[in-house]
Length: 183
Image 1 (spheres, one colour):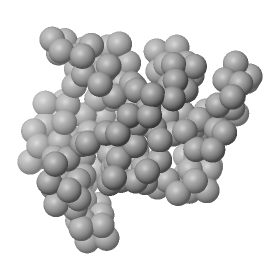
Image 2: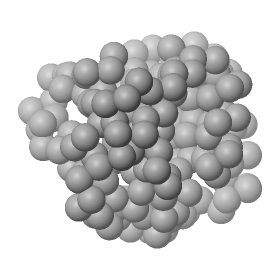
Image 3: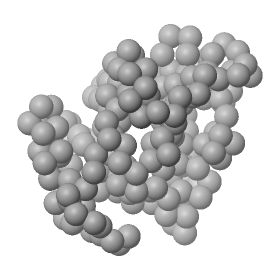
Image 4: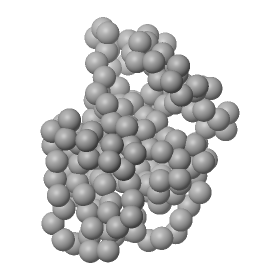
């Protein structure tokens, strides 16, 4: 189940505001320029569905976003708990960073948490099956897949280089509870 927790970035130990209704999460995130949608597959997918099957099941939504934003590439990435480099992959995304391009992810299955640091707040967004999140360029954020990652995502890119992060070294990412601590 999707969830949004809003932390005070300066006092992360204070109780966070918690929102669990999808429409209210989308409304809160829209206020900071973040798109949050729910998609349904056009047909059931098996656990081992490959990239072509996944993209076909979400063809109309993918086409809509491609037409609206002009993505240069769309792919499917999957990471499971038995991946030998899961720790290194998790570490890569745990540090606060920005991008010159916006970051768009759709969760085909599993879960992951995007942390968006905007002004004096950190918005911790638990994305689960059916959630699409689009983080605007320049928004400081980080991503936690958890110690035992389990997700499959569609990724959208408008630049050929794909994911390029500019790290802030602010330390805020170390003060907010991790996905494993929150879930």
